[in-house]
Image (cartoon, rainbow, N blue to C red; front, side, top):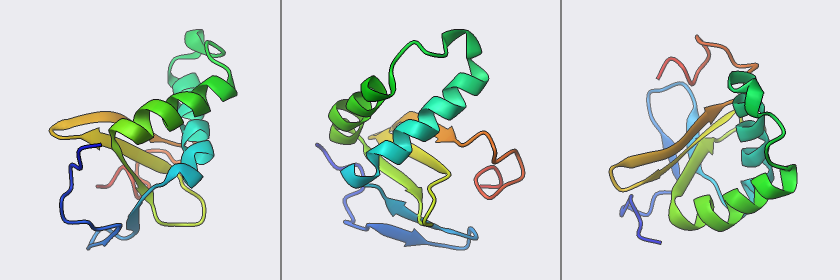
Length: 106
């Protein structure tokens, strides 16, 4: 993978009210769950298009291998962003975190 962030930082703490950390393959289940929950809420006519196993495989084999994936640094990941150089591939937040929560303010 070509690193988008050449600084080698694995956690960012800035004046944003919460910490971001680079996610690893250990986080793939949480990322797939967030994606499915947000996707199904906003595109209900496509709900069930892929199985949870297919979602995990997609994030494990494609997204985590081709992108940098960052999420909030809490015990419960509530959102994530996956990006490559000059491109955001994925950006999802759990549906139970409506506008006005810490992700939406940024």
